[in-house]
Image 1 (cartoon, rainbow, N blue to C red):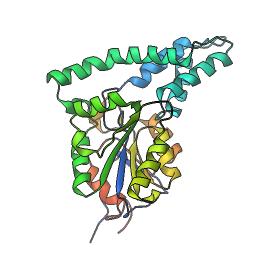
Image 2: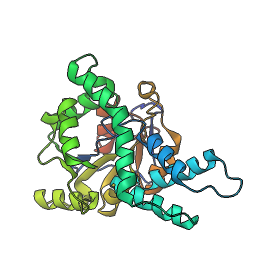
Image 3: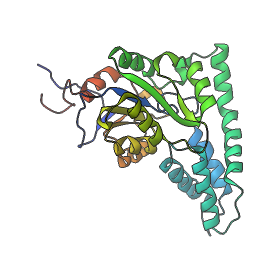
Image 4: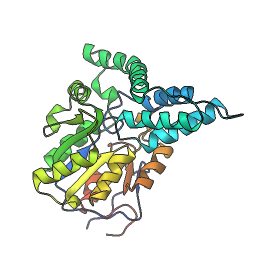
Length: 284
């Protein structure tokens, strides 16, 4: 009776995809996965990075920026400091004398705050609804997951205080079990958060579903046998339901079994993930 769902082209299943009826817990990243408040962060970081790199003979600024974006996206999901450490290594490779990673991090955060703070302020004042800075369909999908009896957690490499503030600002507090996992010090890793959640609920990795836009949380989820869904929203135009191809490639390489542009078809997707209906293109 169950025909396969006709999900749109903004959802791609890897050949290795297999459903998981046993899923009990769902882990979300924040930035780029649920919140778009920091959209454009990678571009801000790439400009700082490219501007700090000594040029090779005949190398254009654009070439340095492409190198920067590759490095940045390959570490997406780890704390910002790791990307700044990579930058100092690159500067040394090219014969330069870098500053401390911390000083690059401070400059990055200063520039990023200049972009993000006005967005937050507009939400606080009520001149812009929180939905403007949520990945499309996110709130309804979180509600749906909770109604299906799943336990939701949030883990972000962003500093813990900012995570708490933004979750509140976007009106997402009610959906997540405590604590919200944000970075409190250098020891924060998504892998440690995953272990803590599995231990807390006495679960096996196969019972974990994770959504993230960074290769780190995708890899860490796959490492414990969880089901990883990559979120590759086109941040320049999130309402169009288009996949960001550069992110899709990075997420697939990290092991994502499914890649989505947003949550507009979340409930239908969940039925496929739980094995209640077959994926598109498969006979029931």
